Image (cartoon, rainbow, N blue to C red; front, side, top):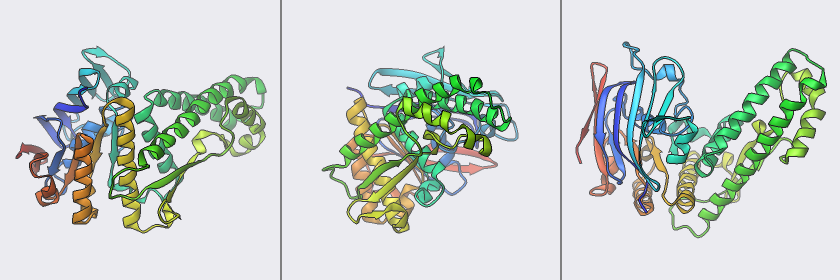
Length: 364
């Protein structure tokens, strides 16, 4: 069965890339160049081959290259377990559009073609910052297993926004709330079930894995029940306190993700910075193993500046594991020396910038 890989990528007016086109194989892709050259912009484009706002969570209008502001476009040819697909996504100033194999498609269709997992420097503080980032990390993990998770999340958020509007307007008539709370309960139960299922798969992928990175015990800290009927009752029962607060106080939008460093029995938040980074890498690799078993191919891995905070031994171990997985991993770093352990096993791209325009050269 074929794996998952971006084999052709073309960018037009995407951030610092005015026009860029490259071909790739199924091997890892090592991208190096000075800070500000456009390396992260390149893998951000790959992240937008999945549903959502990509690894930087940027709005469509933020991505267009300046000063032209003509809009932007990404086109890709992708080999997947289900065959080859052509994907295009673009924006001309409004919401982004998607086309798959020449036909208009919703963003959710991207999740059924490509599973994409990323690790970026801003996630290094994941375990010590607010729960919102951990919840987003959890839902990205879930999306790699269950492409329908995004649709359930959108349905829940849409109904909750409408309910919150009623709460802020101090609407007290119960008749206005029933249908919205039923929608939230149905979608919320699906969200909770998918989250727990994903964590179970990742836990199984960590058991007995040959890896240089420490395992983590993940768990969900929910605020409120997770079953549909109980969740609907909780929404109805919570209306008085929600009216006072002007927002919904229980539900899957309040869930937090917890992690314990398995070997030490220590919460991730109390681990050293290096240990927290190692735990994140371990989870990304475990997720890739689980997705490979579930979908028939590992996901695309986007690892921004991942090598900068690893010693030589850990870097080599990471690259070896990526190669064993057979994953197409797009990795960035400032210099080619960071990718020396991948010599002969990866495509190498040198990114430079001049006059505000990024240029990409294949130096494999």
